[in-house]
Length: 372
Image 1: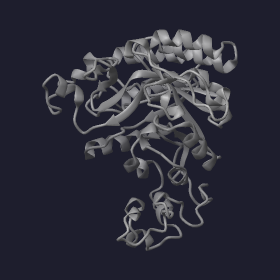
Image 2: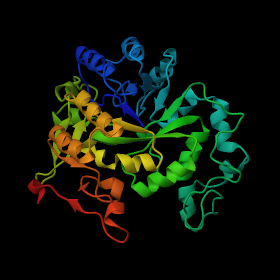
Image 3: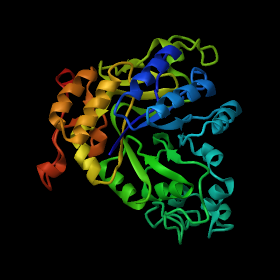
């Protein structure tokens, strides 16, 4: 099992970023994702800086992956993503609209049309198949759920190949097996699960793409949503156009509470992230058993290398999950969560694995005292 470090979601100054990755170079992380995912106005991580950071990490024996925008809103952003071809590293695609850039165009088109020439044009998209006044699509079953096209095994064909290793990031929003199979066939060799999936969905998707590596976020603020608008600029009465890069004042995001005073989200520019940090350290063995080879930690302004060390010790068996949990709570002042993995509200933390509780029993969850 490899420990990976996701891209920095926040805007830090360049010197802080460089010193951060020099620390990471000496950490037990095997794979390091670098690059800007949230906003193109955060121009700190240009090609030259990315190249410098990548070389530092590569020299330290790390696998380096270049992450790309989750939301693409104009041609300049698309051109920047395309320019990342200059860097000889695998790429994490976070927007389906960029897949053609990093795969053979014919490869992508082949995935869409092979064996179904002239059908995609005349048949309604799967979601429309739910309506009764349109002809049912061959790509949905009687319940309206998507099904893979006939003859579509989910495995890459021998005639198709990617131009470089391509990782499907969590923002691709893969909810089911047919979607995972489709992306795998376009050339994705590793899939990072989106945070809202529960265990059964993760298992189903994993089994549907056995030759594709899988990765799951195990610690950090969960990425939840993007918006064309900038939440941070709006919160301080600035427009997105003249934002003054105000998000640099919030290196861990801007806390956002409900009207009842519950800390629920963090505002991070155009991105909404969870306030509580997901913590799956007690579920490492479950994750291993369901075939996930990579566990991702999301960077934070402090203690990231300590968190990596703790997960490394747990995966090596030199520290128990319970012991690690008590330490990791100290790095999550707003609390920890893992609810989605168990089909519970995402902000809850489930203490025990249902398998340990026994069939037919509900997992035990708790709400921290300050929320009761």
